Amino acid sequence: MSRYQEKSVHRQLLFEKAGFSILTVLTILTVLPIIAVVIYVIVLGSSAISWDFIFEMPMDGMRAGGIWPAIVGTFYLTLGTAIFSVPLGVAAAIYLSEYAADNQVTRTIRLAIINLAGIPSVVYGLFGLGLFVIFLNFGTSILSASLTLSIMTLPVIISTTEEALSAVPQSFRVVSVSLGATKWQTIRRMVLPQALPGILTGIVLGLERAAGETAPILFTGAAFFLPRLPNSPLDATMALPYHLFVISTQVPGMPIQIQYGTVMVLLFFVLIMNLIVTVIRSRARARRQW
Amino acid sequence: MDKIVVENLSLKYSDGTESLFNINMNIKANLITALIGPAGGGKSTFLRMMNRLNDLADVKEVTGKVLIDGENVLDPDIDVIALRRKVGIVFSRPLPLPLTIYQNLTYGLELAGEKRRSVLDEAVERSLKLAELWDEVSDRLKDPASALSGGQKQRLCLARSLVLEPEIILLDEPTSALDPVATAKIENSLVELKKQYTILIAPHNTQQAGRIADDVAFFLQGKLIEFGPTEIIYTRPTDQRTQDYITGKFG
Image (cartoon, rainbow over the protein chains, first blue to last red):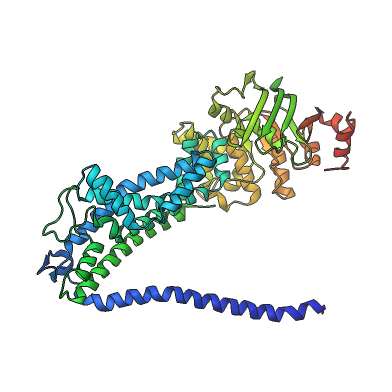
């Protein structure tokens, strides 16, 4: 047996085991807080959950009754954000990834988009107040809030979509073009279907953030209390995150299970979005072969 | 008859690699013309000029003419889509699209507006037979192309370029990723195909060119050193560098 064999194998195996254990522990440490939060919320909030809590109007200064208008409001805001930000974001990403020349201007735009994702959400809120509420005179409304949330969501959608597009092998594009496809045909028939799972991930990440944000809608569309459902995009609306802020800080004598019940509903709202996208994504993945 | 006439063709990439210098060449119809020479000598670039695939690359400057049936395909005003349907290409790595076997073949036809199921079915069968793949896949056309073996994938790619009924087929080292058996199958197909098509191939090695090519062009560092019938180039080359390359003194 050569002198190189025996010596190192033992130590390497030891390192391997130690490294594996450390990674396992670290993974558990990352997941634990999330599980803890969810359990905490369920323990404190589940007693509030009932048919009436979800589908009734708030009563008694929001200390009783349900949170239906906030649920509906968050649904409208998320939908509105999706309507504006998804087409615009995906189109911008397609342009940046497939059409724009790789020069200084493009790189600067890309950098700006990445930086936009790091801007504190309250800044978007103030920007939305200035542009949509006051200057464009949309008022404090679902429209203004959705547009503000869209601007906040766009960088996330653009950068993840661009990443998904550039992950599609260049060779598919060359083959497609060599078979007589135009650039757009290549993008629509070859690139987009392959990138779809990644694009969906980006969209849902962006929209989840929008659904849970308080600051951007604070000045642009959120109502403290509205005894009815909004009936036009120009109405203000209640929304789950803002409602939570209100009942946690502004209303004395608020029963704690209502606060945590609201959190639970918000969590489930996001969870359902996630589930829907996961199903679509896994279907798209099943079709993808490379 | 000259199918392709190349006049004073020069090309520079933006990063300065693999240029072409003043290439003049007449390529005859219904023959296999092989482009041989060391890597980086401009063979791929030359091939991709024929169907303007270099439009996708970062090309700085092109001068000269490439006349196919008398039409200069480097003219910016020509219908480049029609050109690519007329001049098919097979790449060095088997690159099936992430679709089924059937869809790989109909992709180009559907882009060309063909929707009739019977026409598509017939074209699929015809091209697979030409590429000698029909017997192996006829019962599983709906399977993903990725499930095929390397050699089958490459024959699928050959069939895919044939399905559009081109007149010229470009092959850029089509057998470099294949084993000898798969290579032999492709070579047999090509010899059969030249009856109907004009074939331009950058072969995997000089032996392959010797086996199948009618004419051989020797490219070295972007220049066409020598061009002529295979038996002359292989037995009595006029240029010393051609001789050295063919006898394996450098590669």
